[in-house]
Image (cartoon, rainbow, N blue to C red):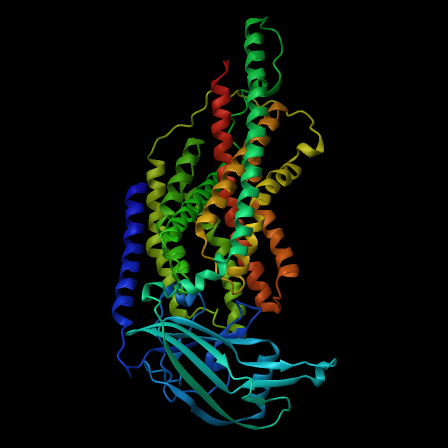
Length: 591
């Protein structure tokens, strides 16, 4: 079932990337004097990356006919709203202090600009698909202790520096003229004349390498040193942990096997102890097996989604400022992999002798999508109230609903039917007794919560250095492009999660506690809770985010991401534990 799915995903994404490359190759050649597309995108507080507004929400000079650029699904999800700007930057056409427009700013418009300058508003534009950033003004705080004495200035003059190679644009940057300022300190009508300058300069940089400038920031030597320190730190953690666990488990298991073999040769009336004692209960099906199977199905789907995203990242699909590519890939691949969730959940549910597979399938479909949908509804409402670009247009919501209705749901049902008809039986090396044994009284540190804390801490310690860079990219303006290092960290995370869960499961069985199913899942997934705890630390200690909208977006969407990690790593932990338990019980004789 996976092979056609893989081919389908690659066909869709390769086709889209080929289309983009071919359009790039044909649309970026210009003759002298040709108009080059310049779009104004958005404005917003620099420290609140989710809180962005349309460029013309601020009272800049507006063209007579504002032309909106048609955008792909991923661009809209990313909050991009590109519109034509008044600046005319024709190819190799230099301008000096050319007028954009003259206008009188009313008191209300002055107040809006001043509020924006106070909040460190930046603007973003795209020139020939290259991003341009700049601040709209500055606050003069020099020598002033009282905020009421601060002076607010709006930049009136913007200079575009463009590098070109033959008939192609290679690089563009903007500088705001510090001597051309408009004083907006007082609330009164002000006459403003907006100007711009364009300078062209030739460069040898080839067109194919024009995006490298944007990825260099994350590849600087001191950043790479930190990344590699993170990798080495994680690798040492993994080697020590796996070596330590493997040595202990192999030695303990070897002693167990020898002891149980001697017990079998000795008198039969000798009482069994340890994990062999509960061989008749260890494969007893868990409580809430429909929910358990649904969690496994969702976790397997999210794991598959993550692997595909890494493959696309490593082959270079997510280059810097490929607007919305990641969001498009997430939506498309999640929709196409829903069959895996349906198949895994229903197949496992039927192995556990579940009868109501339709309800199980509905639960699988809603387990991750349900909380995500509710979070989205709340946050989209907040964005609408704020009139932010993060608020999705009605048409985009309809497209997502159609994808869910016409692709996700049918594939989920087809996967469920295939899982139900797979007729696979649960492979248990030991027969399960009719009545469960009583679990002995255990010390507090062997209960679920302390075990989850132990299980989540080690995998989290292996990834926390890399987490800062990911957060600074997703919730800031830093660019993350070192996907190879991130992939290594992901592999380390999986290995550590599997090993720590197996070790804790063994100690749980050795204490004659046979209810390991849910425990192994919760222990594996507990890293997601640690990541959410890191969110609290990052918000308060490492970022300058503020305001209700940004705070709700940060904690709302991070809750969904951490929940996804919980399901995915819980599945990894359970699968590793199941493999281990089957192996050790096959190695002894069970009555």
